[in-house]
Image 1 (cartoon, rainbow, N blue to C red):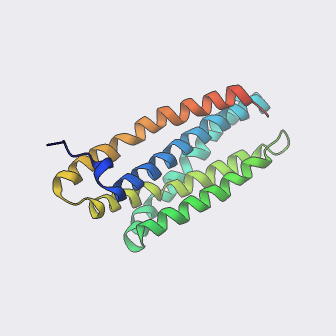
Image 2 (image 1 turned 45 degrees about the horizontal axis):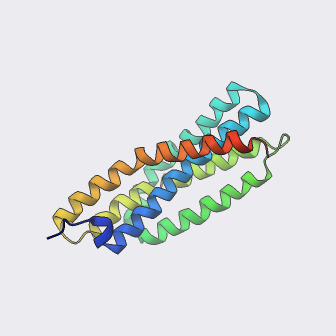
Length: 168
């Protein structure tokens, strides 16, 4: 008998896992790539550290809203809306240049604020998608470990991107 595999055996959990990981990876990729860009364009450690504030503070401020929104509204719809809003905010990154570096801070702040809704929606959805207590236990372990892995992957890719493309 084969050992159960949450991602192979449960399509809904697999799709949610992929979506969550893409979101986490994108968050870290964007932050590291923007930090490299801000450093390259401004040569200011202060502005790079302020970018970290733009990454952290909006998420901190929006986090108390994430849980109630995930509880009140359809979680799938919350994740879709948040993803669309993050994509729109990321469009501001297309216009960053030496004279519009402030867009990096605005876009990063919006992306981070919207990201505060992802984790509560995902964590609330997992128990609804797991088919039994054992699958829920395995899914929680898998989903819980993905943030750290995607931090490393997304930040690594963002660093490679920033180094390779710089201001281009």
